[in-house]
Image 1 (cartoon, rainbow, N blue to C red):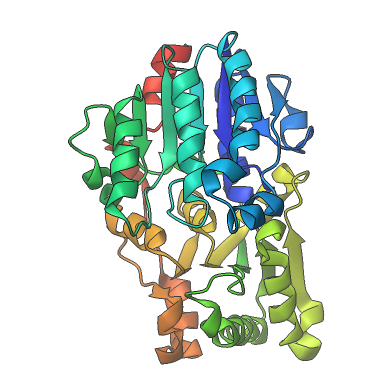
Image 2: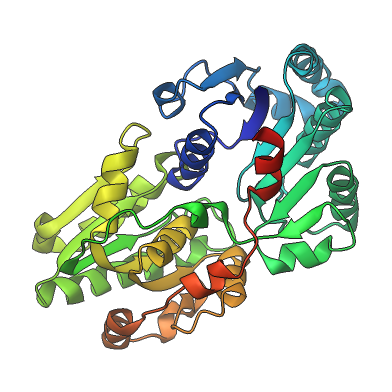
Length: 370
């Protein structure tokens, strides 16, 4: 069986976890992934994965679109894409969309709508699955209505938070289940007792948060120093270099002065999935801004202190009835380092009773592929 798939391929650790789970869950299914490069590190590790090359949507298209109508500017691009999808639809048994924040409304709204229109036209008579996503944020009601139509034409749409689900709960094919990474089981039961991991994000390219960058970096640095002074083994992780995480790590490390030599810097590069997972899981405590660092911490029964950057993190914490403390980036200036230090040491939460009573993301796809 062959399945064509759309996944966010940018060496983002969270999205690569989706890939890992998918390819190991269905070893006898051949998955083809749309990508604008003919290689991708994680895909190369699996015999049941390959790449279907598609043209890259470059800056030229968007620059051109400023002077000429978008429909004309993108016409050639979409013609090529349509030919590729038409060819694949003749040999593939279905289309899978797998990812977290794939349905945010933004600058590429026109492209996104055209992409889904073409997919659903070419795969009109074949199963279509959407797994692992949240919806939004969105500004325009027409944007929501467009995807309501797309979801209605899907065989299964599994959304990962209740807020997103309630937007489309009147559609019979839409359901809710906690994030797909919850399908993982604890990576390791071994924990270094006095170990803490920090997982920042870059705020530089996030217009609504960039004004907090100095406050955010200093907060991370001061909290790391507090743990170092108490003789903890401190690590800092970059989940996605393409989104500026490594730059954020370096900016925070610079603020530590001589203490920077005592911090372990761990960067995910697309090739070191297992080593990265193993190193990450050995921490007893986590201070996390990356969505999937929070999810992994819950799976591994690590004490987490989330510093949330979007409602998608807040929504999940609400859904699981998280009883620990957390904060948003905009609230950091009201917190004292000493209090956050003590909170992190005591922020225990058992997510497994909640998961045991929940639906799971791959249930419908299991029925089809197995």
